[in-house]
Length: 534
Image (tube, rainbow, N blue to C red):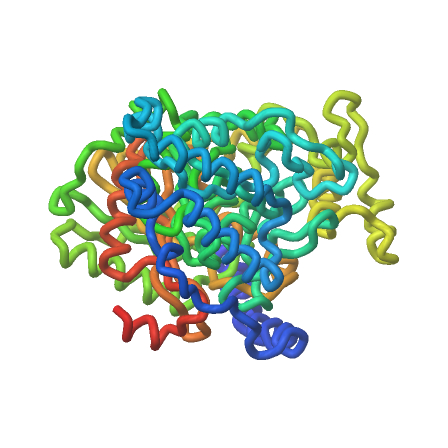
């Protein structure tokens, strides 16, 4: 069997080697050589971190209203190009910012506005539309949910608002949050701020995009197979998938059921690494005590492992040379700072798709076609075979990826005999990784086989998401880190993976890499120009 697998691997790799340039050439003919990017950021307020802005607002160096106006103005400037914001509450946000300023202007500032109680006072916030934000749409990109508005806040939004943040907009997602391009038939398609012919990832693609465009600093995302990390990667910003059961998932649609409950995580997407720990601490609430975010990390005590491919999966693409080079530079940089660095090969990673799928199937949750029909209570399902026919004649309310997933589910046996075997393999990989990493090690791993592809191209590479999804199945904390731009001007990056509840290590490594490589590169600044500025 291993010989046959090796032969298949090389045959598929050879086919991919030939087919990939042809596919790219075809899409280049459709979309053109290079798309439009958003205008450069010109307002210096937009270039501050959330932590920095909160301090300046509290000390009255700048008003919350001025900050909010700057972000709203930038959102209005870029959103016609990228379509990341799908619903706004600009006037309400400005009123709330003015109220912050009024309270801060008093002779004695109320204790409730202290840094301890409101660490991110007055800082603008965007929220993935799939999360409940009181009074705002909550369709999750499903046409039949048009008109649905949230009656209260989701758990994470409630905590961030309680910490002083002011939500001013909701952002786009894929249909029912189950695809890695953010497009749906309610709001349309979101386009990359660096090149509008490229995807933003999904399902938290609107968040990653609006943050990278300089129109938001921080957002709320969810991640069941990479839905925080892929958008952060494709958009050149930071994202963190927390350890299991640290941040509550309540208040998002669709809710996780069955085996999905153990894979879903809620976490922050941020433009700057220094904002990851504060935002995660707030979102985690009491759970923050488990992940030691206040612990200082000494680079000399860290062990850095690196793996540049997924071990030879037959269903995923090979990692782009530029991404490998960026990962090697990051690996070497951390070693030069004093970390102990060692390449590693985890053979079981080649079964990432199978293990993630097995974990999703365990526990017998509701079928995706059921959510498509809003049949959570009745058991009703969409007939996806009929929907594919309707889609061909442009009469379906659903996107092709959603219909395709529904069809795949139809052919998935209710009692797959391979699931128990795959769960055993998953546990073996979990034990191997947690033993390897311990309480002082992290793994550098590719985020995706290539930088942001053209729109619709993910349909031809549907399983590439498993570079991120495997860590959902493993329940490990992962921080997505940007590493500059490719020759084509698209974001590069990698994942930093830790053992359970070692979130502070992955975030600390993200900060070291941000210092070494510059972190987020504003759209409109080419690779050569960004190097000059460094």
